[in-house]
Amino acid sequence: MNTPSPPTAEPPPTARELLAFYLEAGVDCALLEEPPNRLLDPEIATPPPVAAPTANIRRPPPAPAAIPRAPAATAPAPDVAIASARDAARTAPTLEALRALLETFDGCALKQTATRLVFADGNPQARIMFVGEAPGRDEDLEGIPFIGRSGKLLDRMIGAIGLDRTTAYITNVIPWRPPGNRDPSPQETQICLPFIKRQIELVDPDVLVCLGKPSSHAVLELKDGIMRTRGRWHNYDTGTRTIRAMAMFHPAYLLRQPIHKRLAWQDLRAISKALDAATSAPAT
Ligand code: URA
Image (cartoon, rainbow, N blue to C red; front, side):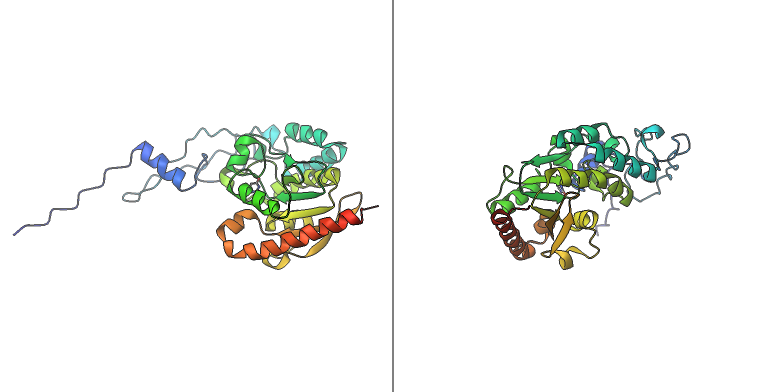
């Protein structure tokens, strides 16, 4: 009789296999296991010790200790950063000046981990402006908003009502990619808010479209989820006049939930009508 041979232990994964595993799981940038408090003095904010690996549990190796950390001088307390963002944003007389200001603004820690500033794309003279949440990996590499998968869908969506990047202006609430595509923190959003508000004021579109819940909460101050708020008109005070504004599904959401494209199409048709109406009755 054959006696079953004992199970052979699996060989440990190679570094290449581990990296491939991480990449497939969406981990495309190095992070610590515990979030460091970047607002503290770097001497104080040492990362917590990494626990010794437990036997039989396959876990990723500890993150490298020497993660570059922003110097304390570049990470002011959130309320200081919000106040300085407000003061700075209102001084920008043009979009170019606003972009230049953001290039030198050090109040938001996201800048430290992003590859580059993602300011805007499209036509600054456009009568319609789309505002998303924050850049993703593709946008971070190119410095252009909405050029990845969801951007391609956005292009098709606006194309369906006769628009493209020569007739629309596209940007985000947050101009730097949050590491690993995590959600921006409320503080990071508040720090970036004066800049997007100033950007809306300078573009001065007839119609403003917030893509997804985070953008509609930040810019339009809506409280409900996108399913309740989408497709309704709101008044947005640009600082110089009141314009029509709508929240609609973010294209990334539509990629996950294509069944809702029908509702998105209704919203796009309403947006197109509003643009036509603004043409025949230009703002005074
Ligand atoms: N999602 C966004 O909200 N903005 C981008 O630029 C890309 C993806």
